[in-house]
Image (cartoon, rainbow, N blue to C red; front, side):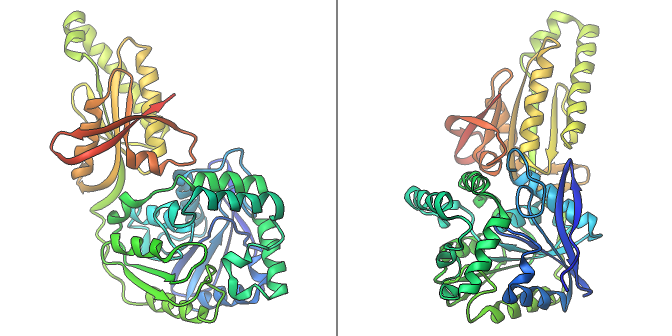
Amino acid sequence: MQPVTQYAKSGDVHIAYQAFGEGPINVVVVPGFVSNVENYWDEPSFARFLTRLASYARVVTFDKRGTGMSDRVAELPGLDQRMDDLRAVMDAAGMEQASLFGISEGAPLSVLFAATYPDRCRALALYGSFSRFSYWFPTEEALQAFFGYVAQAWGTGGSVQRFAPSRADDAAFQRWWGRNERLGASPAAVTQLMRMNSQIDISAILPAVRVPTLVIHRTGDKAVSVEGGRDVAAKIPGARLLELPGDDHLYYAGPNAEEISDAIEEFFTGSRTHVPVDRVLATVLFTDIVGSTEKAAALGDQRWRDLLDHHHATIRRNLTRFRGREVKTTGDGFLATFDGPARGVRCACAIADEIKSIGIEVRAGLHTGECEMIGDDVGGIAVHIGARIAALAGASEILVSGTVKDLVAGSGLRFGSRGCRPLKGIPGEWQIFAAER
């Protein structure tokens, strides 16, 4: 019997999910680029896979916002909001911790979540994964050909040739796949979604994953090159790579679908590896007042202290608004962290705009990377990079690393290039971008 579809509230958006199974561990299935939780059960091979999961785990499946049974949204989300949605679903289902099964486009989201919330992720299994969009569509011509299919034939199931070639002659499967397209997203939403996906690049955060990871990929996958899975496995510390023959991208299709189920069960039900939570992925924000010494001298001690009080209150109000965590103040500067880079950038922009109205200007810099949690403080190379980027900024300017820019794809934030710059004490040169507002 198909599970009942429920809704978790993520901000103002309702996220459709289903929970089923009574096993001793929790598993969250993070879907590919379009899905419909109610349509899953009409395809026997898919239902068989989910039933197998439910035999040893409590399982949650969900539709990302803008797709399937979840609320339609005016603008499709970036990875920040999708992490919020995943967390909201886990909370609604009563899952403090779960193993994640990230599929195709769901893999980057799963990786980011595992690195950011290692205490909530027991293990990470990825199928058909990639770190960069070019492993999915290697050329602009290939992407335009897909857009042509969406415009002319979306909903027919014709893309089964790419996603499940072993089922290409199965008329019933193609009809089901066509319905999955239609129920997953409209043609316009698919086009918008893929344009957002084309900006995804999580290469820089793969080394920050500290949970046990299994990467599964078919060597002839026609949708996402096996090189994408190899790249992910090579960069996640200790990750195991399982390559299987075949050219299907759908994990529940093909002659070795049961082998994939076997590998996932063995991985998820094995002994628990201790996950150190003293290192997590975070976005660090540094701010400081431009020309503070001269301003203090001109105003005198009392007026300068009053101005600093306004400055501190403004920053703290915006940190609360954008879910940032104040780490410390350094006289006229702040160090804060965020669990989502887009929120960090928006917070920095809001601070710069509001601070200007009280007669001073701040500079800000942001970077996303692995941070050491040292009590209430943070450390590590990511913190140093954030500080060096902030030092390059001008008055009311928000500078970010290329890592931050890549991770906020689809958020609506815009950036102008400031070129490759050396950062004092940091090896190599770094792509720097300025937030436009």
